[in-house]
Image 1: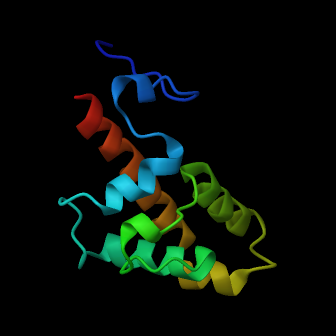
Image 2: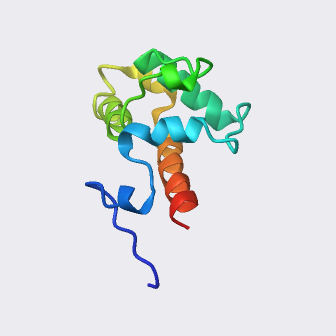
Length: 113
């Protein structure tokens, strides 16, 4: 291994990577985001359904959840399938989980390299 990246507890922020509370705002504000892609549509549905966040609103006015909070909702949905089958099927939680992870890694890669 040639490179190791340590994340968490502010270690990545010292290198210019976004902290959890700014992760989604930085991602959705990026000019690289394709607003007509399936990933964007899935995430827009997820944020609207779970957090009542409209991604069409000005990003400065949106209070995004942390990355951990967003993943926590998906983990809970998966763990409690019997209690929230409609949510799980409607939001395709595994796809959203994958998309959220892609966001995190792409932002870190763009920021740190």
